[in-house]
Length: 75
Image (tube, rainbow, N blue to C red; front, side):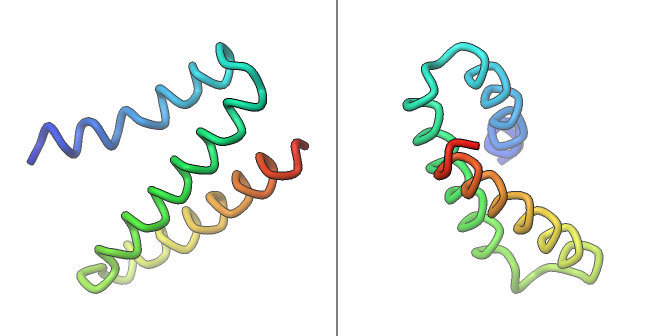
């Protein structure tokens, strides 16, 4: 379980490095796929969230939507 949590926590760090290394078209699709994964991951666990978790989910959801929009539009 802790290894799975550690892997999920490392994904944003890996994405930062990949943004610098990969071609923009490949990076665009990887960003969209990973962001959708994080949105679904958060939605699956939302029933057990406390108030502060819901706040963090809303902030995370907003930024995830921005990432998808920026990746999709190439801004």
